[in-house]
Image (cartoon, one colour):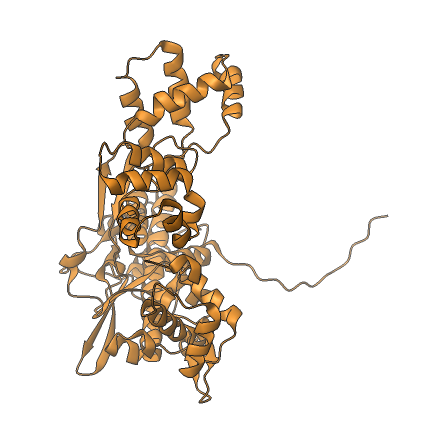
Length: 487
């Protein structure tokens, strides 16, 4: 039997406008420009305002359309529910941006590139090869990864050729095509099945009677494991050579590329982008001044033409066609009004966040020394600004600041803290900087082990466990002592 009952529920639901605002905050400068262009194309009621443009009050048009005795046209949403009362303007214009706009004009260049696949395919068609071997070669080229390696098993390729290409062949024939055709193409080393083969293919193309080149080829072919483990003494004893001879051979090996496909793109169109700073930070007379890049502060307005059209249609209360047209126009005007307010709020959020970061890290921006960085987490900035931690996270994500000491990735300014021997909290970034300095000054013939690094950093006042040293070293992409050894 069906029963009716009342139930009270508490819930939280974000409006579509609020979700879009969060997305706008997360965008970095280039993405924001693209989003702005898209919105300008899709909403004709939104336009870029000229400096001398006259600003009208859009709300008066709404009143005119909904005068007493005039039937009201309802829209799908009321933008007034989602805007901020302290910023009623329908135009966003901010003076908090960099005056050096011309420095950032050439931020994105589209260039016509050539993929590794296309480059190799062009070459293979110039080779004297029979039709079936050509198809096998093309298939092999299509299976190379972006670094130019053939990572797949030959047996799997043989099976694929049979099922997808209708070519029934053998493992030996595919290997023959790979070694005698594909691996002979430019760049040297392409089609290798591993690092050792890649380096060998390159060194073997160096037609030279040079002693160092010959020794390098020999080491790569027969002493590759000893080389990768930097067992130099073993190699010296094996070939009965002097240390200088090994140095010359290693110098030849260092000229080889482990990723021969690295200069090519996986797609025919490549996008070369500079880093465009979202913020500009200046230091004047000991004061740190944060500003928005002006590309984050566009001057927008509601279209005068669309407002005039809405006014015109407001006088015709009887035509259903005009009512429909007026509904469409009002929706576009409402959307434009909300979008401009959202941009304004985005600017305000970005500026408040960077101001809080600058306040926290003032010493760093003045000196440019990473040792001056204070421990700072998202919550610290959230406490200063009053924003939610998730909002701060969106702001700093993928954003950069142009400082007197270079371009800085905002996320790099955040770090946890540890307590030194003096009881002071220090940034983990500072500790990593010290660790890097110690390793850079070590004797490369006898690199410092993690245990030795623990002792040195402890002498500097940083009491850190060995596993922490290992973690920081890995985060800095510094190999273990054995692999840092040099002659």
